[in-house]
Amino acid sequence: MLMQDASWQNQIILQWLSNSPTAQYIDMEIESLKDDFIGNKALIKYLRYNFPITENDLNGLDLGKTFNNKDVESLIEMSNAENRKELYNIGVAASKSVLKKHFD
Image (cartoon, rainbow, N blue to C red; front, side, top):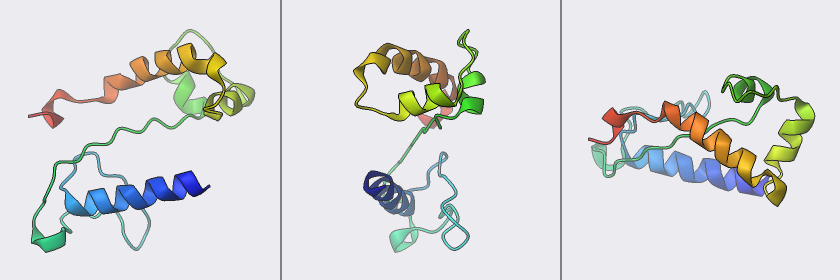
């Protein structure tokens, strides 16, 4: 839980410093910080591509396997080295959401 909280805090600050085309909705108060910058201008370019490891998202990758809840629980346990090849394959398949236009 602490790691997830730290990740969200970093994401909030980085989205606040940038005009990110991949900005995520944070919550009802903050929203995505679109057009809300420190100093009234974007200071950095920030891109973040997150892939949620859920049954639906994994099964949408067409990896030739049907994922279930037990698979998800195993995959999110990042200290489980047995998943390294499968996580790599998931990363390669999910990378199709990375858009060239974001890297001008």
